[in-house]
Length: 80
Ligand SMILES: [Zn+2]
Image 1 (cartoon, rainbow, N blue to C red):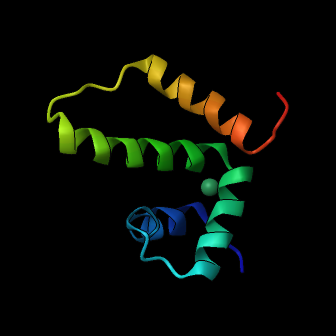
Image 2 (image 1 turned 90 degrees about the vertical axis):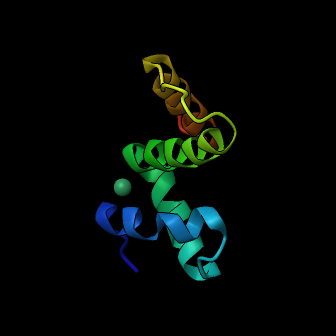
């Protein structure tokens, strides 16, 4: 199954709240390991939900995105 970046943004809600079927979740995770923009998007989306639940007015500093990029590079085992 080919997952487009557009489709990722559509199923992200289900992925984050855990209601996405396992097969789609697996496909999504593989896409995220090969697609940095989507990986960052997911992480930002996920963290934003958590932040907005606890702290309503937290701005996202530019450093935050850089940190996300680094985190995902590590999680996916990518070099450079
Ligand atoms: Zn993508």
